Length: 324
Image 1 (cartoon, helix red, strand yellow):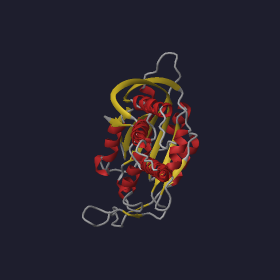
Image 2 (cartoon, one colour; image 1 turned 180 degrees about the vertical axis):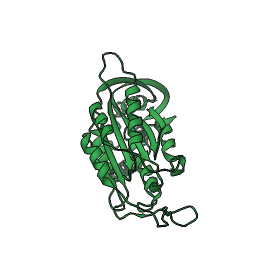
Image 3 (cartoon, one colour; image 1 turned 30 degrees about the vertical axis):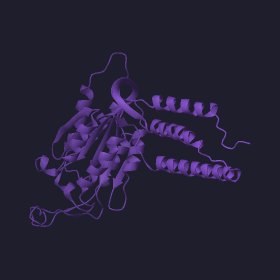
Image 4 (spheres, one colour; image 1 turned 180 degrees about the horizontal axis):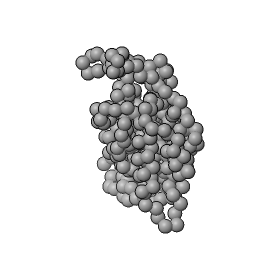
């Protein structure tokens, strides 16, 4: 058997208050009966009755759940594609511990906020690959997020066109039910903005015509930092100079602005992932769906009904503690 809610301080506080109030009631009755040469032992069975009723109410509040039932959930869902930069610059430590690791932690929290929506994952550097197709399976998606590292992709210069074109291809390939409007689609680009690829404008025009909104999360700092290597040294360019990677928000801002989205930043001083979550929540799904999910059957009705029956019995049965 499982519980819908954990036993925590509110329940413990209620038990303590009940015990103190009832103890005060017993002591008061006992003190009134003592001068008359009578005893308050008749309250004993009332204490058992009320204790059982209070215990059953507490159990009902916690929600005892056993067995599984299938329940339909009607949702107006949207498709969210996460486009995550895995270029070498995402290992920069200007956002501790690194840009990529900090983004991973925040993406894990973001995924938990969108249970009714399908989320897919595309990783990119000079090329782009679908790491996880659109899915409702949050556990699988969390697993893919946790295994992200820059070594997954071939070394190369960052190209923002590649993931956008791949996401658009997947978007257009999605089957659409007859008579149903297309599902709302959202792209979330997580990158430091360093783009050494092709001209973005043709891709942005296609993106705009599709009605897909793009939200960008710039990760890094404007001051930048050197890129560490595995041997403890730093990365050098072809001229022997140390490579300094910086956040370049210009292209990300333009992408977001031209598609009706928004630009946010994750830096060493500011974390705007909560603002991104709020912005995504305001994007309404356009196609209503009915999904069936397995949920534990909350059997709170049984202890609640028994507790109410005991309380009614307590009211109907009276006990004279002090007799003339």
